[in-house]
Image (cartoon, rainbow, N blue to C red):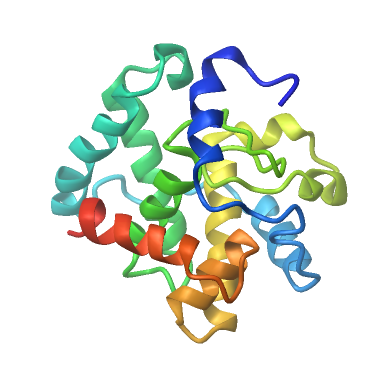
Length: 203
């Protein structure tokens, strides 16, 4: 955990109690082209309030999670601006994938479990950012590790990975989430994400 930002320490400790992810999580050869294509995509410019009701329902919930973070984790934004930035990225990126188009709340549940909405979170397996993307992707695709803390890029990469696994597992949430976490055939992580989805992120 050396080099971890001091404000992110609390999140790192929180993540220590989540189901452990293997260091080779997301290291699927089939993902390389998916991630490379996602990185090359232009920023998501879909209408910010395509679903006004969804934004109105989700914004207070994300704001509540952000208020639990130290102020400097919001990258200079107030809570509302930071929440809207995350929600816009989640809505827009999820809408690109057939397996997530009607399931943006699943992405929010993954973020909640993976990083507790801390963009600087670093796990003991080395995963980085809101959706805990593994750092071998920057090395593979000539990015810097710093790129992984970018909110929009991290969510774009994370949703692409999650959608890939959902497609591979034909919509089986437990198996897809297990692959995302590197804990296939174990129920702890999928059950935690789906429990969070039902308790906090259902529409």
